[in-house]
Image 1 (cartoon, rainbow, N blue to C red):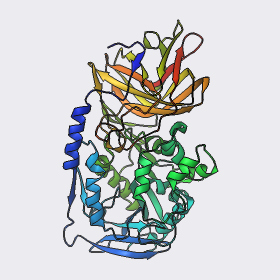
Image 2: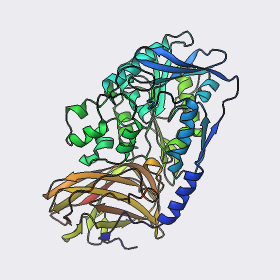
Image 3: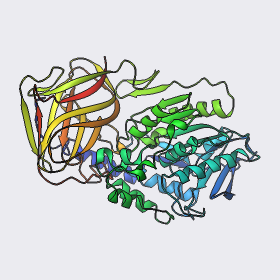
Length: 520
């Protein structure tokens, strides 16, 4: 395989047709099994009045003394738990390319812990419609301090109920994780632990405008799903009208450093478009003395409801809700694609050495370029590639950084990706929204016209490279995947900037490099 710099069209990769067929099979037969809750296992109290919100409680038929508590948004007040689960099993989980099946009971709300699982462990599950949603009163405010206050009130309410021993934990995926950052920072009475499973911490930087580039795909679908709720503002409209980071966006960032309770944080390497960077940033900023990072490169839902995650979730919650003798989890559960799972004392691992691979006329090289070079491409129709042949087995663990001298004739929306090729074949990874052909990692950057040097931050990853593998860097002025929902990373979409020419440069006077965290 040629590692020298050259033209590329990164949105065209082999295997698209086979992938589309596999995805169609997943739509017809989603990889989800929804089980009926056995009669007599639990009782459900619906529309329980709580200040500013309405809750639903699932408890053992013999009343439990512990509680697991979490919050949720519900866009339709008449939607029951059974209806929610049947919908969840079809869309969007039916569109994902998961190779593993997962299961939950028919009382499970979207991306929430299974109430049947909670009850089996002796806990009561509390679900709530936040202000402005479902059967709750008032007007909601997405990602705001108000939501954190409402969830904190819910925690304190649960801790005072006769079926609770005064100890409460929060648990959930995505938005059900994001609101935990807010509520836990307020330190509500009774909160003993949080299980934050893939939840970003900065809406602007992590989802809406990574690198200043506007996200215009997932946000439309998310906004459509919120129809029927009463909200103070439309997040999609705010994203369109507020291109720069300002006080509005800053106000949506939770004070994670104020959180003191033990935390189990899932920061996957397979959700770079949405949660990966923010989840890991949240873990790094936590004020908790006992905190654990649980990483993986699998499907979001298959992993959350999988046996290994449930085992660790159970051990963590038993330790902090039940005074069990379960030992603490490792500080970092590190899953390296191609090398398995191990424990680490910190993130990134202490032995991950930042290593620069320089752009040269013959490929990416540990040695700087001795001769000047350049490559120009059309920002709409073309792209750039350059590679590195791995000399010996090595791991890439942590975030990456791309430094490029460039010149552009127009404002530029720059996309960069790092991909793995083995034996001449593209190696796909699990990605955001259930996409099964993702790259190792990706980065975005909005670049004004003119000549300049730019730094593109690429999301965290953990991958084992074998001797002889090819690591390829790709750069383009449009999103790196097609918009086709069967072959692309639907619904992710980032509108391209104006059409023009972009010239990348390298040489003794223009250092260009990809910085990797390598573990030998």
